[in-house]
Image 1 (spheres, rainbow, N blue to C red):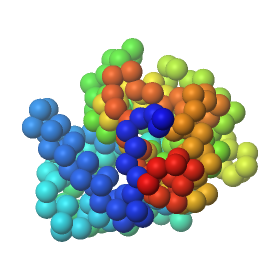
Image 2: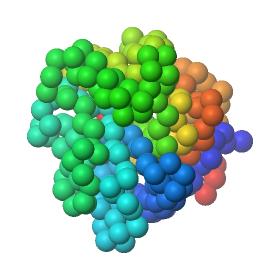
Image 3: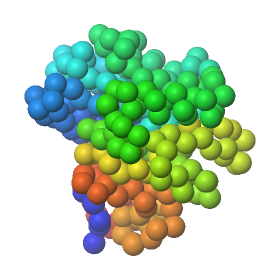
Image 4: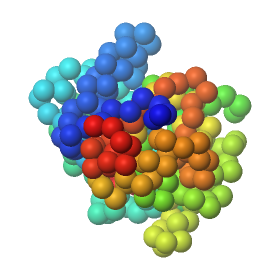
Length: 246
Ligand code: 6PG
């Protein structure tokens, strides 16, 4: 029995097309209902093809970019033009190709002192979502990736950020990467209306099986459980090979 809504895709192209279709559908609904679509983008390499597809004529023309606000689920603590920057990846694949107002793109300041960047991003979130100190912003869609160790966003196993249940944005030092990161915290992520994981590659098959077929709580990604929202797993066949489904 597989938990959550799983969409098994032939390859990254199909995964991107299905995720893009969901993006357009959710954007239409949110903009019709509230005049705005607030999305948090995932970093890493898997979503790049989705972002390129959203920037293509086929999808971009269906999206009211002036009513769409793009945020980041996490960022590496590097300059925005650094090869490791999630912002740079999103800018190359998406932002540089679409008519989105600069004010609608909310970058995490990876170049700043992590604690300062986290505080500034939290303030941005509260201001944009008109959230008071004790309210938590509710994203229409949060896109997430998955690491082989079960991390998601920059919520890594053993990180103190896993215990952050008040702040909206946390900093973390990832020993094995020798890198500082910024990340949204569980309270924000688990308050989203829709969370969609984008997972591709045979290297993810073991962790995907763990997360989708057991009740494990041993991984950060296992704690993604929106109180009042949906989770969809877009998984390529090679990452779903151990699920026993086709
Ligand atoms: C990051 C991501 C991270 C990523 C996973 C999967 O900044 O790297 O937020 O959580 O989504 O590590 O990365 P891939 O898509 O490259 O496998």
